Length: 222
View 1 (cartoon, rainbow, N blue to C red):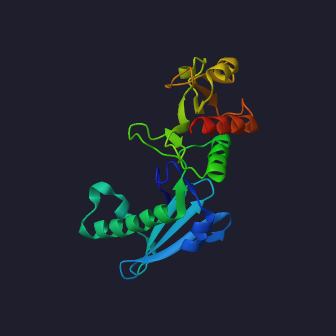
View 2 (view 1 turned 120 degrees about the horizontal axis):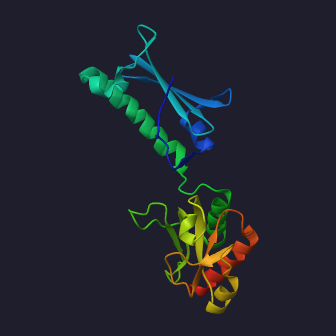
View 3 (view 1 turned 120 degrees about the vertical axis):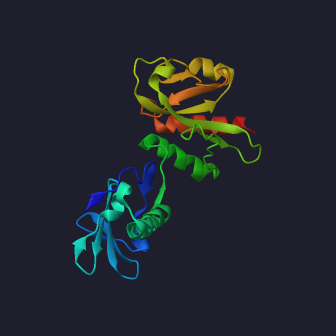
């Protein structure tokens, strides 16, 4: 079987959807079989729990693996048909069995769940040029109360080029001034530093403290 590279970037498996789609669990991997082009070919898709995906196409008549659909420079009319059918299956799997995972860390996903469960608000991705920047706004006022994004720690004046997920939260100027220590709480990245602060979502600030600051930010967005 051949691995399909960069097929499900920024997405994660939904195991219930995989099973509903028809995948079967075997040896800690999920397998799906389908026949293509009037049963001339059998396509098998294998998905591992680490999001890696592998495929194989077998010519039913010869029982031999078929690979011409993978050779972009040599695809002819017939291999192009196989490739099209193969791609349609993969696109359908991607659409029906995976969900977006723009943010990777446990902390960030817990915070997103907290916001959804408590306030019913969803992340909004407003900028095509910044696909990993999301805002959250209060329904009643349409005002932002959180911004989540990924950036280099160096942009927070830390001595590292490591990427980190952060959240910007609104608060009173007095509270902001007391919070900022440039270790756990930072002047707001790309926002009004008098009214907003930045927190790294890497465990430096406990989740419960971040939840309380989200609640304050939400109240200020009336």
